[in-house]
Image 1 (cartoon, rainbow, N blue to C red):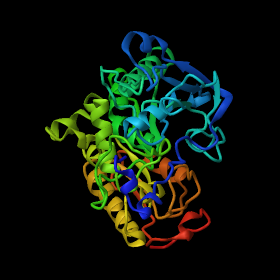
Image 2: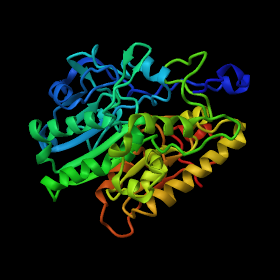
Image 3: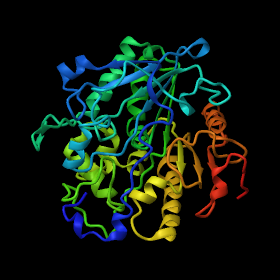
Image 4: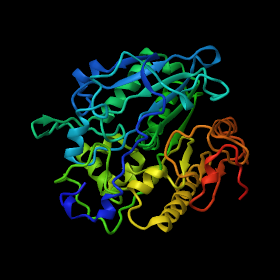
Length: 405
């Protein structure tokens, strides 16, 4: 966000898009998942949403051979990139749990209980972590600043730790044989940032457990358009919550890291590697180099949120460059450093939630993920499903198509 908002070009302002992928499609109030508010942690540890309300997760219990298997999902919804944005978020669901229902319907896709849609995880325990901190569950700021008469709390890391503690001690996660850590959009970034934290905690109590990451649309590039001035404090003419100025992603997320004091919430090995530039560890591409747990990235190389928020000016040629960089960096920064990691990398212009809507090498995502998961530890097994088509590619968006590279 920029103070000189009114001075920005009309073309730039036209690309201040909304993140419409903030919550998994189909999620709604009232359903089979029970809500658990982290009230004790709120009161005793300061684990608070932006507005001071307690963290919250929903749990739909597994059954049969899935009773000790877990899918844990970090909800997404952009980031709190200015004090104005943080204030606005604190008054709605992206900064508060005060209006949430006691139960929820978690929706379909990765949460589906239909074995034909979700063959591996249909009967697993499904957890949805509500997103209310504005920094991908990473903030740990003891100070709660007052802005325009409202106190704001930057404590997402404490919320995540409180949820983990409750799940391990009270819901049976300590007995898990399998854990898939996931999330979409800002929750996909959270998956890159926190998978090792989840997996290390599980391995500490159950060394034989299998634990992986499944980030959806979370590999956001560390990029600032040189034509966009880095001024993220506030705006004279405020954007709506989750709107950003296209091309200001680097400065916006770096500001979020700093104001939230997120050093303790991101990957400790990354922080050690980037002394003096610890903010880099808030970005997926830098954090990915240090993840030791297996990760299977679901990612569009032409991610529609990134074309509207990250790439800045430049049109289709810039989108192709964006896609080439996402493709190269997932392979060089994630997969090269962790040989068990893989990716389902499509060429459809979309963001989040396209579960089983795209086919690559004969597989939709549920099939590709299961093949990858089952073959972890097997030498020579397939790791990369790469559609690898030039932008734009409308045919890439159909499960009926299986394009030959």
